[in-house]
Image 1 (tube, rainbow, N blue to C red):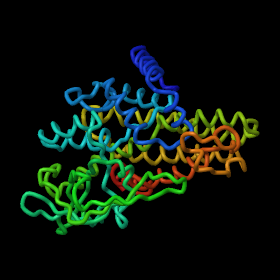
Image 2: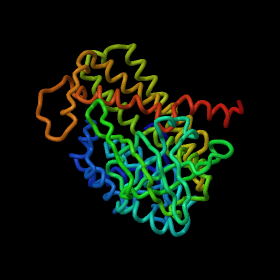
Image 3: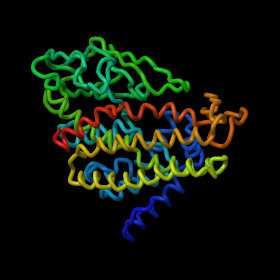
Length: 393
């Protein structure tokens, strides 16, 4: 990392590195480095270790279980975790719903849900996208009709990441058709064990069951599970999405991937190719610039607010950088990157080597990460946000 840190910040970085060396198992780190499929148990194991240390919800206030870190400490922690190939913390409870409840939740909702997010009692998933409402989220049709002390929910959500493991889902639902589409949306917390919910798997090309369809048929949800007030869901959704988009930027993940790329390139003929070296250098420079921008965005939100439209810049640049690194992996390996054996991404694979070290997962990462510039609001949508909110266009 080329950023200049104070002696205190360097001491903190050393503390994080030492803790990771003592607590991140070689088994988990190797699975992450080689893009093997992580099981629910793998993710829960890392969640529990971070929670036991008090480092899980590192952007939450101390009174709700956070460590009281400043933005630079949070940046350093996430960065070092990525470099050590630690599993990504499942973001839906800790990094997405948590901030929403802290800002918009009732005291009762905070007291009930926040501790359960920390100790892993509740696994959350996100119910935003629908077949006809992705980046155009305001066109969502899943309806919630108030009947006495509960809502009745009908509709469909899609691309629900890890929904097969979830105990709860936070959902955007339509509670009114009056006025602008954005004005009739509410934010509901729904128990996935409620009658009328069906989760259907979507299997990806690499064989992984990462995403799902979720169907709601006359699902009864207690009215007390409404976050904020009725029809203010769009405001909450925008607040949550700024956190999601900042995370999608993946500065730490790109840094780790770039280091891995340089290691792999040294095994290939591209090691002596000046044009290829120039492309790697261009990514390296862009990534260093984005580290500084990421720190600025985090610092601006240090007072407890959400990141602003700058999170859209991070999302665009961050995803472009990660996709370019993936493309350079394939270019470095050439034809040796073509073979793809899905079984090689599972534990216990003892089959033949598929090329130089890294070839087994180069194609998988390339294709899987094409989604980065689409989910969380496509990059085209992010550019519109920047042009309107920052440039006044």
